[in-house]
Image 1: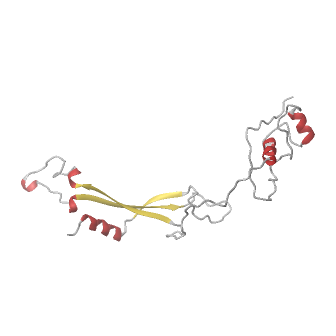
Image 2: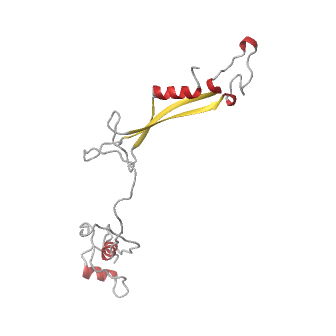
Image 3: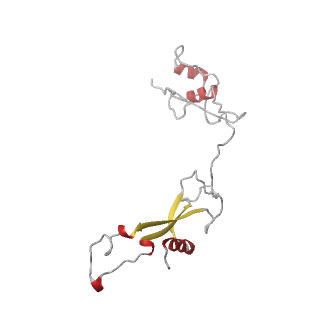
Length: 188
């Protein structure tokens, strides 16, 4: 006869103080440390109501875990950072940033820099760049949006612990553009 034989390789449980064991996890209070003195199937037949013909649970591992529960010494949750709930548009927070990238005019492949010399005299084109460099400004934001609504219909607040963050380009604000122009010396 073939039967299901569980070989627990590891186990563990942790509960809040005074909480009963999970009801959906089959276990016994005093499992044997090994089966040297009695066959596993005989012990199961005489001490439990577990099925030996199929196994989807790990009752022996559950029993070992309940017999020797782990107690973690802790003082609550560790410190971590989370988002303020200041929203934009759709009500969720968006983390926005703008960057300015610049390159010296001498490093650009233009007609008057490192590029091929094109034109002479009146056809010699100059690329006068304010501040002697070319700069570009871009902005982006990341926002929280689940791909599908929650099955229970509840609203899920954005969290850094969840993977539903999206990214998108964002218009450069006039103040950001003005700051970039001022740094480059434009308009002087």
